[in-house]
Image (cartoon, rainbow, N blue to C red; front, side, top):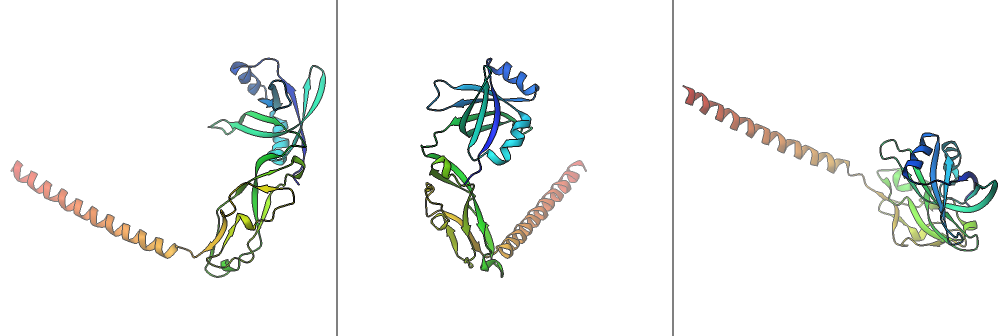
Length: 226
């Protein structure tokens, strides 16, 4: 099951774009907490250092969000619904947290880890990992870190579908079961090299024809000047 981690935050009194810019300059990231059990969305601020500590472990799982507000600390079980980043520096600029109920199912995506070695890759075959995440629904306490796909039986031409993943009890798959997770195929290197050679030959022919045209035009211009 997914690891639950704690994250410390503070409630914000002032909001707005100018206030958010001030917070970022001082080493904080603005955020918002919302959910069906909250009377109104709660503006937050989280230190950049705290985010770097928590996100590698808690970005997909349940976070126990400890919010300091009016001298008191309240604990909210949450999941991160959205992370906004600066398009140039990739810094986190805002987070959306969603308060969850431990007795209500949640919908989220988890990664797919492939295990084993496909026999088809021992010879000429190439493994293609086509689906990296899968959408699931389950209770928060049953949320897995990832799902496993066994590729140890895949020969050339074989595929591993969503229906063949190892699914823990209590977890429902929402992604179509026929979607392909991984496959073993023959390499297309020789075909690609032949195509590249054909393209190079065509370009050389076009360049030669263009040079002939330019030489002909230059000759006509010299005659005109004469």
